[in-house]
Length: 595
Image (cartoon, rainbow, N blue to C red):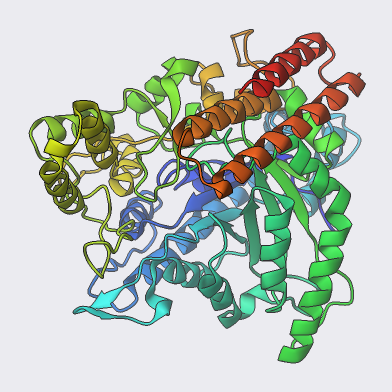
């Protein structure tokens, strides 16, 4: 029998450290979460930490060991799998021991769900303990332990200046580490298509369907629009690989790196997925079957399971339920709010307090990422303080011990990180030779563009070390954290159960009455983004740029019209806010017209 997931939400990947051990914290309750497998140094230390904490055997994997990156990832994922299964078994035993434990567990579940109904029969004394055990065995499963790989962070590896085979590239090794683990879960691919990496999936049997129509390991694509989903899904299908989930994320109203669309808004994108869901399934199923037949593998007669999920700025129970009902998504991602839940995420106390105190004006889209992609940021981080201090001492840049983002080959064929001291010194020296030809403002602008890059490899990992009182080695980098703008409306630490009550509409952890609807928030961000792009190219725009700006404006205009119709027809979810939302849409429409 196919059992529905326990919960209607999931916790997406956040940074390198913030969800690094979330499965250990929440998976026993049926909550799915995703961790990054980019930083094998962090992973190795976390593996040692948790093996010691749970009295599991630990064998250090040093950099002298062949294929150490993949082996470190495999070892940690196996540790997570072991601990989660142990905690899940303990939870089931606890539920069999007392009704109070069952009542406490029910209190964490969606208001309407199969498992809640089944457990309630035990509370009502209509079934025996033996029947309760059957219910637990049938309906309860631990949450998935998914892993995230940024496809473009696939740094080439070298041996004495000679490049190693592509299988040793960072993302390739991470995929191999996941594939060799005991997990039966998913790899979430983000940041677009990497054909070489996508092709590497063909090497692993675990990603092909079995005769029982099951997948031992699954693929999730994080996408920003339907076209991207169809292109990437079809590419993988032609190799006999099935995408089990398309995880749609807002282009701007999200945490971490922001991948802005050409004015396509989340609601419009979700509507297209809803309309074309069967087309997506049929197209990719046919392509996959043809490839599987050519490979001599099992060919499923019917399409495998496919989920459509959404995330990005969701903050209320009404918004959550609206996505589930109106767009028929299978799950909703709740990210940034969980940074204020110590039971769910790994954040040091000082940074958690910074998040709790954050206002709208403290959150901004920055250019600190060495990847050259806009990056959500918050003012006042310790990383910002350390970075400014080094610049004041004429020592701009990081020592760059990890080199995961050493992808720029302008000054070195092996690649240098643009946040590194080596790269910034070269660039600043070159800038100095041009100083006489530049105005003071032009010089400062170029100086800032070089030095604002931050060491994300260390900054996004330090929170776990600080929270767990683990030694931080090397040059001080402080903490970088990348919450979505939505964090401005959550201003205090809350328990896991309280946050779940908020999601399911049984409590409210938001104190402010001025939080905008998440569709409107994203729309305003796109309006600001459009104005800024137009400002930057004013007076020197190329025909291609002008065409792109015109298309973006056209898409935003269409998006506003779509939202006007959507909210005018709504008589269930946002009735109290309807007039205010419609007025905001009118205001934005006028602003865009004159932009």
